[in-house]
Image (cartoon, rainbow, N blue to C red; front, side):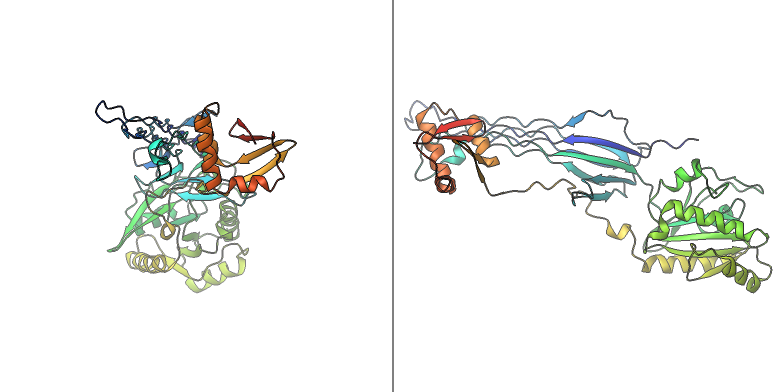
Length: 423
């Protein structure tokens, strides 16, 4: 069985918010109806949700995925409808990675449970209608606001099955038998090597929690490049790694080399939260076997404790199981770092960023997302609208900042692609 691609890269964008409406009440018996333009609806979000029934990452092309646009606001104070949200369904255990380490904004979220979801790209806010521009000094607001663009995010989806305890070892070392003895797993057990071809899973159930334990396929050589390596890299970093060593054989150094290669390829050895344990299988002379393993250990497989176990010995298996339950409860794990099921994993667009003023010759550029959205819908040829816009700029302290640039009569103000003449 070939392992499907475990990572895909996508570019997604939240929907643009709807435009605000500029309108006034038109009622025959009310001569001064006042403004009643409603706000635009929010743009749709892009959401990633883990589903138990989904086994593979979605097959999506390189194009941009955009959520639905928010509807424009209407008269009588009606708010536009929110844009359609796009939901990407992924397998449980998928990791979402956004941003980059270079920019210092890299974020990761691991969807470990069914129905856990994350907003990866928020939709833009809807623009304000002229009803929201009404004030004690402006009873006839003519301004409204365009909808905000949604977040643009490049992300990587990485399929990572969640495992608390990993069992690794050389071929035919007793990994499958140990999994069956410790957990609810029912792996195929045979007296020949390479019986395990996929990730064999089971659970250790306690009164408080359920511990996930899995056996990984063995390497055929320290330079393994096939499916066993792919499967090894398709899971998270476990809290505990059990290295099974068959002490009834004389090739212990070779077994250790294979185990060392697995740990190096997985990267678990560099994780300070992973505890490495040994299970010494079929040791006739336990003391001698333990000393032999310690002497020939190449150094990568470190552990605080070794356990002895023989297939069919239920008392020894129970001792190991109880110790694993105790250790798992004390170690920091990825599961303890799980965030709220509906946590937003968006780029967290900044709100209220201060405006900026730049000058190019006789042109003064106002850089402010909010006022750019107002200017987008404003008819600058209408003197009343232009006057109201100047009032709003003055209240925000922007005209004061413009004067500090040494602006002269006749210079042009550029805002959101629109131009106004400074007089």
